[in-house]
Image (cartoon, rainbow, N blue to C red; front, side, top):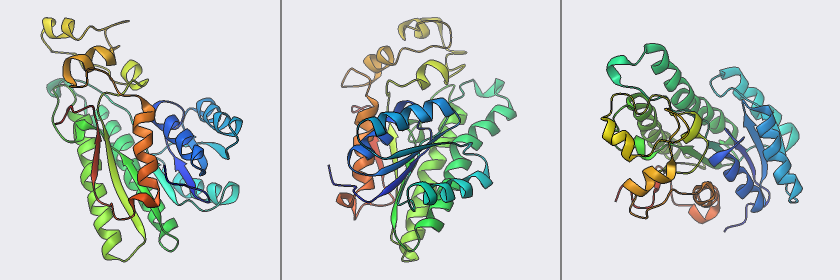
Length: 271
């Protein structure tokens, strides 16, 4: 991996899963990391993992849909670690459900957490990095590249992340700002989102299809390995660190001519 010595990274949704793996991996390459999450205890645990391994980290509570909090987070980062040069917009939720039964409230919540937050974070980072430069990495999904039944709102939000990322990258380049913006599209990654966030994903699907996916531990708990076995050529779910490795590359100067691109990590699921 390329060195990130002297860099400062903000990682949202850093309490677990891909966010935690990204924070730990960035720190392992020398970056100082501000780990943020609504889950204060989880964010602090991530920071402790980093400092316990000799890295530099600070934790903060953040509601990524709160516009004012983004300004506060940038200020906190400057005070505690230095000006941010890396932003990983990772925080997100997945609300499943059939379109005909889906509520407008859940639609708005999905867009707010997954898409509005990426706009707010990217805007804040562009303002912060416009003179010194940096890398913005927005976490989308393979669901932002293709449609999936019972995940209409999630697909729409993640597809929005994909195209917003491209627009931001072009805008930075045209303005001559030394900022790169890329999106990462994980496939089936074994993270807590499969157990607690994808609610209603199976509603309305044929019983035999549900049974084939081997739901475990209740109607809303999904086995990532079972789904990966059925849908991924590599036959297994990905690990958070396998996504984090790509995030580290995109954060580093090794990817200095890469911007406005979508990067898929999915075991050939989309191939």
